Length: 355
Ligand code: NAP
Ligand code: ZN
Image 1: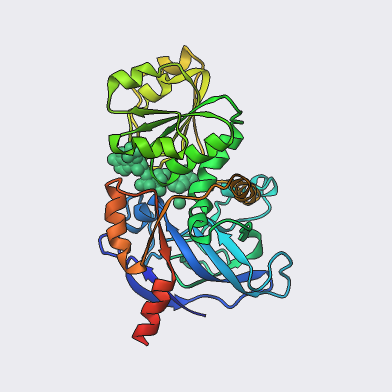
Image 2: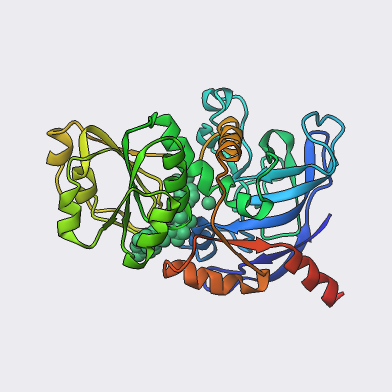
């Protein structure tokens, strides 16, 4: 199936129009007309080859919402016309312990990324959601609950699950004190979800201008992380802390913000390492430093249902696909409120105009 997209030709060139072929749906595949795709900082890390391992051309995009246009003969869960989502994964081994437990994100063989992944059948590079259509095996397609705005729900497929999963795994309970570092795409979802779980939420930000937004989104307290005095004032106060920042940090003051037995979980994935000067803060308070990677498919559906129940979507700025490079520049500067979402009609219009 002829597919139109935007791709980065290399790590130092802007994204530009690109076309390629998607496979015709196999027996267990769902073909999806893409309506919206969120713009994750991981897209930028990959398209600009910041992490290493990027394959080019690179068609990013793993926060996909669209409508089913065709299903294979053996597909049981989805129907033509249905609104669905696709997140960061399109395949995994399906047999290892993690896959058996619904944790395909931790597949022993490595899951197949929606983009920059290795197709398990053809060995080719996978192309993501900055495109007009996608074909995905049924097991990796999510049902979009009724009542969620399709554009604002798109970021739930990565930013939503990446923050929901650690909050759920470390069993955040009502009344607990939860910190979130960084008010970007992931961070603003973390604030909303932690609040909906009943937590008392402290947001750490480098941007004083985001304080009012943070409170509107659900933060009970805002700490300007560059202010040493403010950082000190929350020492020893938190049960759980989630770092969503796309840049390296000095972790010590964050570890020190935890109570005894508190957990600092990293989801932000900067290209350079974090700094940690002493382990005293961990040893003397039995604190834990942990990490977390997106979430499994079962948990992603659970998160979508949780968000529908609590009326949670992302705060978005809808863009046309031709503006993706400007959006990346703004994201790099932390100037996003709080997730860019591409309206894929803009790509379809470009294609129609060129024809
Ligand atoms: P984003 O929208 O760009 O937000 C990142 C936030 O970090 C910024 O808004 C900013 O918040 C803060 N920040 C502080 N200093 C920064 C700096 N020097 N450069 C950039 N940001 C800085 O990014 P995102 O989409 O939320 O992604 C955040 C990170 O998580 C990325 O590294 C991404 O690759 C990673 N990620 C990980 C997973 C996973 O499974 N673990 C999944 C998705 C994404 P303030 O202005 O409030 O300080
Ligand atoms: Zn992402």
